[in-house]
Length: 306
Image (cartoon, rainbow, N blue to C red; front, side, top):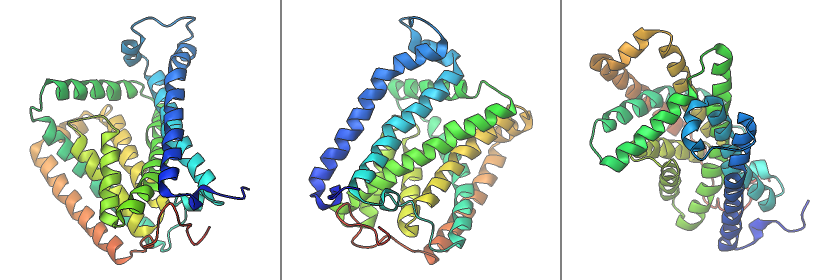
């Protein structure tokens, strides 16, 4: 469509344009948020304490989360890819895996990853990291509890879409499809780019108690993308991580025995050991099936399929 795409520009200029797009959509969300809340609540004017009142309106929180994911992550990343290359989906890594068995092993990886993250997150919450960190954690927990106030089956599917699928696709396109590509352009080392992508991913969640679990998840997602060359696989892992948590919370509210299992140290330890075994098994097989990103992968080079 364009005679010249951004990939021919120096990486520094491309980064400036990407940051400009990101900042523009961030300010757009900040501007639109009060109007969206007012429309969802059906009020002519918002009260001064409307942010506190959001916890009593779970549907509003869910829809705001969706708009946030689209405006802050999805649109800046896709628009940049559209401007950067003639085939933006291929540029961002949205290509099918080269080996079909990779689908199976990323599912096994996700099944192991979820209990690991949940267990480690629970252990870290037992630590005293200061009043500020505790207040941030309580605020984050309050938001998540508000998300799941609704309880029928339709709400489950709604939550799976708005809280699992949409954030997974949007964040992977942003953090792995674009940010990791910039990191690899400068560092020239796969693990440096993977760690940078994971760290930035964790920082953007604005949490102290869950920083390490989210950092670990971000590194795993970045590694999956690097080792398979398919962003669809990291999207799948991300979706399963989010979605399994949504499903577990949904059923735990209906079957108290599931909540009791979560409180049993013996069950938690046993599940953690099995999860680690599954996770390492999947890592080994994905390593053997690896189809890694090319060494010249960067924002200044086009993928072969482009």
